[in-house]
Length: 373
Image (cartoon, rainbow, N blue to C red; front, side, top):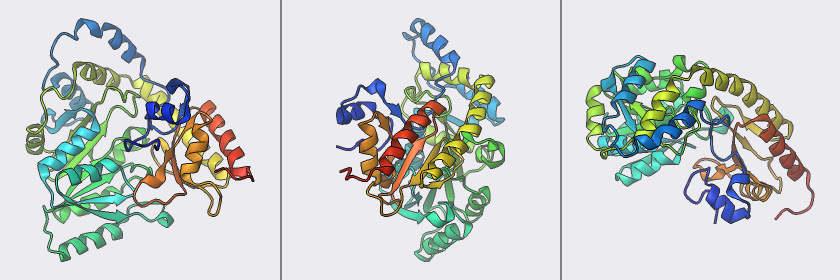
C-alpha cells in the first residue's frame, strides 16, 4: 500500500496504517495547506453552528456569492460556489463534453480523471524540466497546430491549465491563455493556489472569465484558509456558462457551515496579510536550504516546492517518503504525477520549526552510506 492510495496527499489515516504512528503526530508536508491554521473566525462559527444545523442551507449560496462578487468586483451571475474545486472541475467537463482534453504533464490528476469519466480523450502537453516546467507559447501553439491537423476544430478541445500549476508551482503566462482563446479554444484555469501569489491581480484571469464564454477560472478557499475539511471552492465564467454548469450541480452542494465560513474568512484581511508575509519569507528560505542539500529545486509561486533527488543516489522518491514516514514526516512522491520520474518529490511550505525537522532528517538520509532499502 502506498501513501497516495487515493491519489492525493494529506491522507493521515493511511499514513497511520503504513507507519504505525498516530495520525495526529505527523508533520504533514504532503498536503498544501496554510500551516497557520484557520482564521480565528472559524472557531467562533463552529461554536455557534449547532443553532442552525437543523435548517437547510441556501441552495443557491446567495450570501456567499454576494460576498465573492464584491471581493472580486464581478457580477454575482458569473460566480458558482461548489463542494471544493474538485466538484467544479468535474462539472465543467461534464457541461462542455470536449472530444479532447489537453492537460499539462505534470499537473493535478483531477483534470485527467474528470475528462476520462466523461469519455474525453486526454492529450498531454509535456512541460520540460530544463525550462523549469513552465508552459511556453511555442509548446502550446505546436500542440494546437497538431490538434488542428488531426481535424479537431475550435470547440472540440478543452485546455486544463493550473496557475500556479500543481506540482510545479509555475504560473501560466496570461498571454498564452489569451492566444488560445483567440484561436477559439476553451480554457479552464485552475487558480486554487493563486491566493498565495503576491501579485495575483496581475496574473489572475478571474475577472476576464466572468465576461468570456470560453474561459473558466476555478478557485479554492480551502488551501489559503486551511479549511480542507469544509470543501469549498468557486468559479467564474460568463453568466450563460454558469447557468449551464449549475444545471448539472446536485442540490445543496455547498452546506450551510461551508457557506458561513466562506463569508467570514473572506473578510479577514489581517489573516491574509500575515499569510502573505509568511510565504514571502518562508518559501525562498526553504528552497535555498533544499538546494544546499544538493537537491535540484524548482522554485515556484505557490505554497509548495518541487525538488528532485541527486542522480545516482540510492534514495528515490518512494524510498525517501518511506524513510521519512517512519520518522513522522510525510511528503508527496511526485513520481506519481505523469511527466516526472522517480527522483521527484513535493513538499508543502510549513512553519520554520517543521522545516528544521524535515531538513535534519533529510540531511541524515542523504549522507548515509549504508543501504537504506
